[in-house]
Image (cartoon, rainbow, N blue to C red):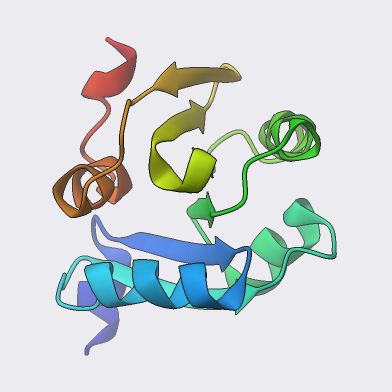
Length: 127
């Protein structure tokens, strides 16, 4: 893919969490030309450092917890243009954290709602 495809209105995704869940998310988004996985890890380090290292514009964390929520808010304070999608209860609940910082309840996560929440132009969740 050319550089213009990957930088113009595309989402650069960093996947964090258990390997099997990251692989499922990666398979769901693999066919999307405007969404690119730029990194994947178990989440042991700093979200902010991983985002900086990979150039991610959105973090997808597959293993939601209270610690994850704190990490998302810290990430948004240090990098306010980055969004974070956190999955809880094995994907039955998900929240999109962005800019203010705040979290937006998205409900049960389906492959379609996952794709839509990762698109950069989809800011309607907060309106």
